[in-house]
Image (cartoon, rainbow, N blue to C red; front, side, top):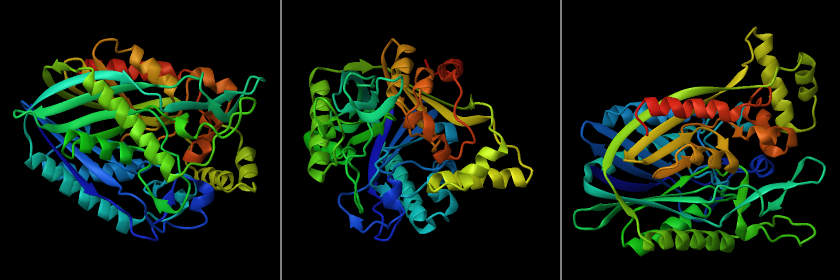
Length: 434
């Protein structure tokens, strides 16, 4: 196998819209950059197959923007969409590159998107140009960073509060590519945790940024590439101490907390590397499918009319959007389309990437379907999607279940989420992703 790595800055200029906290995003734009936002590219070739992994310090891309990036890079590198994996760190201190919430009614920030496309093309071209023979070593550890934010309220529901005993995907997959001289080419690692530590008008990569910086220093070269996992319902443990034993609460984080979280992740990754990785025989394969997750029956028109009269901005915009479609005679969808991508790097070494915001418990379900080798369960890939809870969570409610309207869906997800995912994993296996 041959591999090449590159990274480029995608820092937004002051005045770029932010995406991550609706109340903040409606009040003002970004004032500057606290720490670098980057696109990182890993190019791989083995035999007749090639692949490109692109990791961005942004919250997520809308599907149409991700498709645009894949088309631009694919033309230059002669790659198909299935051969290009786009993963976003999901930093809540990033620029607006999606049609989430109130951004749906706003024109895209084309100058910034053009900057991202330019730097993506440059990073991808550099990664391919520097590709050289590599060996693959992989393993998996555990991380203590993610903490569930779905605390049982004692009445069958949940409240937004730290719940250390709750389900979280603490799986820490590692893959180190080294060239023939033993020098690191790329270190792929994944944490399943929301980078929503700081609130403010400065752009920041949140904890994935300092984690990569610390790992680059330890490796002696820019090589670290962070991939966001199934962290839809978790936040960083460094800000889980805002309350007391009787009433746990999240507290507002600082950039010192971001640095502490990044250092914690780097220590866990280095511990995994020091414990020893296993040599993996290269085998590059890629597959991409679209799945449809059924929604609950659509409500009557009166529900959308009531939402249009709501005092809550996102509810009001959601109602208007559904009524616009109905008034034009267009049917509302009965299912949510979600992309599912598989990328095998070697024997029993695979990346399984979902569009949307899958929760930690769904990540544990996915991992159980691949008992052998090393699996990367990845969310926030190739588009925006919506929150993907488990079927067990639906009766509990909570933000992950009830926020479907912020993504434009006309109704909540129906039960059977795991069955749809399992069918997709079976399709990936048939396409050659073991």
